[in-house]
Image (cartoon, rainbow, N blue to C red; front, side, top):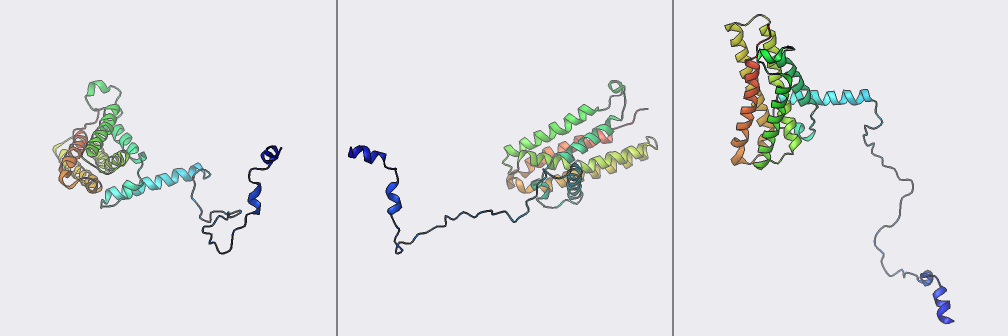
Length: 229
């Protein structure tokens, strides 16, 4: 019977009689604040209007364009990376190089899909090369930098299209050559300014060379572009 009575007792029945002496120091704080709220107003885009989200993204893209046009050693383009700007530049450049010609197979000019694939495939190859050589930036950060640095070449394409409105001549070719060369140099300089610090010192040349070829191919397509008659 005694064993049955002991088994019916609560498991922690005797703990209520145990008192902690005041001489024993108790460390730690186990109090739970009731109704505590975070005083910091954490920014959330879940409740904001779509218009505000689009305008905020456009402002961010515009700021990155400014960073490319005035390149300096800054982590802003790497820290807040996105692919909206590169996508916009790639589509714009591909559309202008295509020229809107319907009989694209006969005019021999690069088409939208070809330009699109060349830009993105080239960016991926350069990014993989950078990572294999010990680069410290992420895959998408490198794509962001390479894509945004197409901006000078896109501007050069717009200028070349305007120059070609006056007809193809030696003067127009010289103007286009100067514009494309300057834009190509600016794109290469801007991209290396952002990517230089992320590469080992003894391997920077191996990273810059593919970047040089990448923008050279794009510049060559712009320089050799001729509108459909």
